[in-house]
Image (tube, rainbow over all chains, first blue to last red; front, top):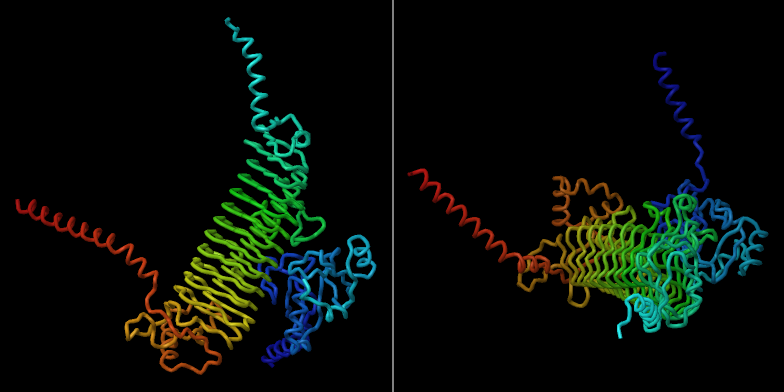
Length: 151
Length: 461
């Protein structure tokens, strides 16, 4: 009987450990240490930064949505390990699921790698930007066909 | 006839001043005047002299003039642009510009590199030809100089200071140029800027004799071409040279030192073509040189010493020319991924590697066996830098010796087929130091002998 508490503690630890949830929330960007997976630039522009959170909860961070698209193109074997792609709203500077975003492309939009694509939480916000500044509206599915080398 | 001195004063001084003004085509402005009004009054080619004092106004220059200050401090506490230049052949000389106060600095949000709310540059120049910025001091929370669509642009002998000490939270580039050709950036000093010199989509620039410290990137090239950089010192930044999506650039005789940030590089070349690095000193950086997706790269006659990793590459499909370099005292000399096409020599020219121990049997100062880069221990170090703590432990010494005797099979070996066995550094040191050491030794010996002789003589007597 004396061993019962030890046994119970062990079992509880194992059960709790097994039940631990992996978080797929976006990771914070640490401007001092985080660099882009593709171009190695420091990530210090919050509006343009993106990330892919993997199934295991780890994150791949990028300084520009163009770098994220390049990573996906160069590493097709990893796509199955992707859980969520996150982008930052240009106005809100808050993380959102990339598949739910609307995008604007324009040559004159200055992003860290010069790809000229920025993200908006809603189509209305993106349209408002295009009305005032000019640009081309893109949906998430259009990003794969976008000419990222055009700059 | 004798003219009274009083009358002389009343006549000669105004006439003299008028003559001076006419002859020098210059206008003087005192602290009580509006600089803008005097700029508006000036004719093309005039020099507007600003008297010593502190001024707070924003101006636009729309004709070719020289604006010259002596002991002039020009401030704007709300972070607006102080001078907007919209004309050709404008020169600004001798000012101290101070933009923003502490409360404004606190409002600068991290990462707003291109936000609409970002701080304005101190000087904005657009569509100008022949702009010169000379002998000024700029203390900024935004960019020092922001310029777009210009030609013939000179920035000489200025000092730029960012407002914050942690580089990520402060202003932008000291000099931020877009689509501006024929640029000369010489003898400037930059501290605490996001980038020292950010050059985007431009061609033909000379970057000479500048010092950039405690900033993010000392020189940041994007989509630029035909750049020449020499005799610069880039110290204690995140990166010394950040060359991205650019082509035809040459950097020589620069000092790229102490980029010891956790992601620090002396030089990072990304997706660029036709880049030459030679005769640079690249020392004490986390990585000396990093290549990624770069083509037609030549790296030669550099001293690459004391770095965590001397030379590294990732996603580097094309080979590069790497020869006549001194690889000394790097924790790891090289580290690379995807080594299929990589060699560490060019023609019959190799490099000096301080880790190369084989004997030069025929005396031609070239090792008979190739230098093989990257042992298993090196690979471990690259992924776990903390293992360098064991570098000189007996276990590592034995392991290294065993791997020398019985090399384990390695895929994609990267070799230097012509490793040099004599360092030019050693030769230089020997040439410059031997006579000095010899004479010093002789004098010390002579002093000792004489001391003993006289001591003995004294003792006997």
